[in-house]
Amino acid sequence: MSALTLSNTPVAAVRADAVVIGIAKGENGPALASGSPAAAAVDAAFGGRLASVLGTLGAKGGEDEITKLPAPADGLAAPLVLAVGLGTAPGEGTAFAPETLRRAAGAAARALSGTGHVALALPAGDAASLAAVAEGALLGAYAFTDFRGRKTKPGRNGKNGRKDPQPENGDRESAPPAGFTVLDADPADPAQRAAAERAGVLGEEVARARDLVNTPPNALNPAGFAATAQAAAKEHGVKAEVLDEQALAKGGYGGILGVGQGSASPPRLVRLGYTHPKADRTLALIGKGITYDSGGISLKPSGSNETMKCDMAGAAAVFVTVLAVARLGLPVNVTGWLALAENMPSGSATRPGDVLSMYSGKTVEVLNTDAEGRLVMADALTRACEESPDAVVDVATLTGAMIVALGKRIFGVMANDDAFRDLVHSSAEQAGEQSWPLPLPQELLDGMKSTVADVANVGDRMGGGLSAGLFLKEFVAEGVPWAHLDIAGPAFNEGGAFGYTPKGGTGSSVRTLVRLAERVADGALEG
Image (cartoon, rainbow, N blue to C red; front, side, top):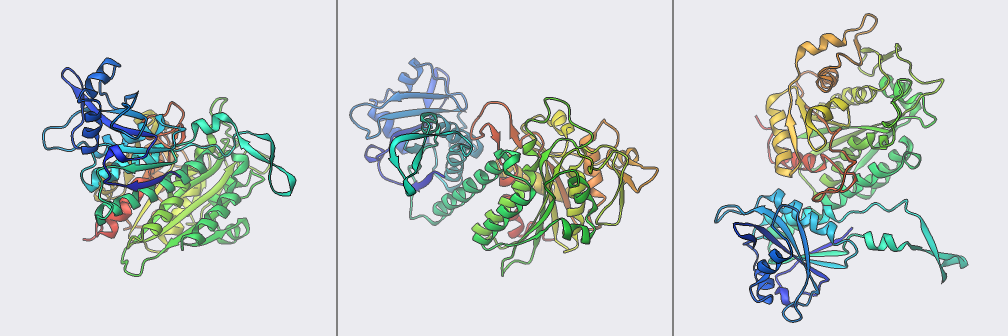
């Protein structure tokens, strides 16, 4: 993880490998973004002609646009200046939107892979702007290299006479910057220090979630995920309880067992618990943790299996959110439930037409074994509600229908309570994540009627994302505010990196859940 520091040292004296400044779209070309004395000093080092030079190089100031140029021989200690576009400048006296700064800092961090230390001279005149710049830089400074090949460098002997593995040149060049310094900041200011510390926690925990999502399924099965959760929970003072297949069978968790029974790697249910002595509210979070989803007997078609290691992104988000809340010491109690299973076809797998007896006592006719996430989530929802939390949120890469409806960058929010749905949606907006509130039309339940069980696990094809939400709602205790986040689109980025979002696992919804926990701690559920 890249280091983060705050500094009010003049930019000319800052020892860094690169300085990042912001530029905006102007009427006659790029213009230096206002709000950063350090950036103004960089401009002065160019004799006040920096914007003109950037324009000559083709820069226009569009969002996330990157232009690099060598620093002048005199006036700056750093050898490189990177200008990142911020788009159209806001009106006079108005700061750039936090998400604009977040994305710009992330784009700059990605463009500076292989660089040692980076000084950020972006507009960060208040704690909110500073937080956005710091978050963006740390989120953008991400690379997943755990499974890259290594080569042995001759003549370098390690312990026991073995040769130390050395990273490939490509790994070194793609490594994120080692550290960032946010300029124009006051290290002695409590609000700015708190913003930087929060950004550091978010950066580390989102990276942890991304790592889990990116880990190949042969290296992360349900038991391995549970063990990882236990170890991290112990490190950060969070209680962890793991139910293995025997405990699940004894407890009657038919949904989780039914999904996992076709795999050689048996399922798990993990409960994480963080408590604060001053908290009077409890938030329960449930995450779908299908460590690999083949579709089961209802096998996915060719071309749809390759990224199904990401089907545990909801559980990853819930896991790291509990850790983040604990590390931030938020005065709210949080439970995290990780419903972990591998959905595989075999002679012991659940068949289309089978009926499962769920933890709640309801029976479900399984018409499609590829609609498995709702089955494991239903058991976890019922169990979580037994502890009478003040609100429940579940997070899942649940339906392809949600991608069709909202695309690949927006997650859907459904709820049994409009006020709570709005709270979750606005928390996403504040965190810089894109979400959209969706309805739960009761008539769609008619499509999930079963002739042999209480309910079927799938309904009509149209509105499939909403039907899945309605199915989950059936397992939420009466009177408990509940929201369902379908993160199928943004959880895994199969396209090119953008802003602070890498290719692969993204850590979608983590920042939303942390922001929600902060607001619940501040009394958002009162009344």
